[in-house]
Amino acid sequence: MERVQVQKTYKIFIGGQFPRTESGRYYELKDKKKNLIANICLSSRKDFKNAAVAARSAFSSWSEKIAFNRSQILYRIAEMLEGRKAQLIEELVLQGSTKKQAENEVLLGIDRLIYYSGWCDKFTQVYSSVNPVASSHFNFSVPEPTGVVAIVAPEESSLLGIISVIAPVIAGGNSCVVLASELKPLCAVTFSEILATSDLPSGVVNIITGKEEELISHMSGHMDVNAIIYCRKTKDAYKTICENASLNVKRTFLWINDWNKENAQSPQHIMDLQEIKTTWHPIEKIGTGGAKY
Picture 1: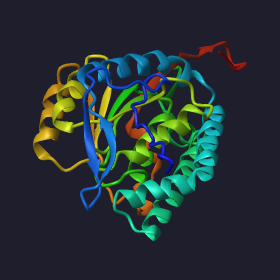
Picture 2 (picture 1 turned 180 degrees about the vertical axis):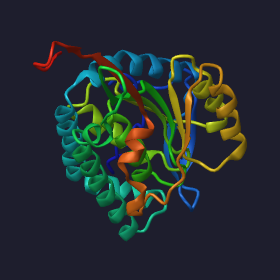
Picture 3 (picture 1 turned 180 degrees about the horizontal axis):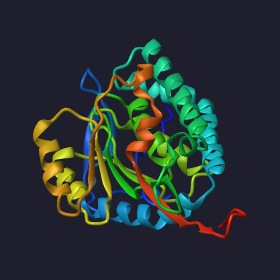
């Protein structure tokens, strides 16, 4: 008898686990010839809520890790991506890329992770400052992570786009919930498998799949989300995000880039998701012999 091939099940990624959507719904992903590639989870509001809870639980310990440790973990993710190049290239081809385009996207994704791993323990030094003041104080400013970030990943990019938005967010010590591309979700799910088996703590990155129009209001209106990044070109959706974000003063960002270009990576993307904390420290002068701190 002819052997029946075991097809991969593409699930969502929440809190380090791979549940199916609680709604039980799915949509069919098809290739250009209308052949079925896979059934993809159609995530619900409850799925997003569970992912936000997982991200909040992970935020404290992740943000408190030393920067060099975060750098090591991003580098480890790049190493594991390198080991699964063949699978990712195959999935990109299934979703319409040429073999050359697929190879280029995977290699750029690996390089982008390396780029941000290098910035983890450097951006604080670059963007911190000691501020001149007229009183007897030290005054200095340092960046600190914003918190839980919701991300609507680029629609046209299956792998490179989602890496390009996740990497700067977690490099800066934030946790996140990501809505993957609806049209090209395969590599996002496979990337979540890489994250699950790397040294990244559970809940730091959570990836769901589904329809933007169903989830955008929940993502932008959730009271425990501190910032939202939108990487698509639907003006009405971004308008909704900005209106809902005002309810708890979320920070909103519109990241529209050609993700294949070098200028799509920047330490400024890390700084977008940082809050600047300024500290005043008094100096007590003792006679003419110097200062007591």
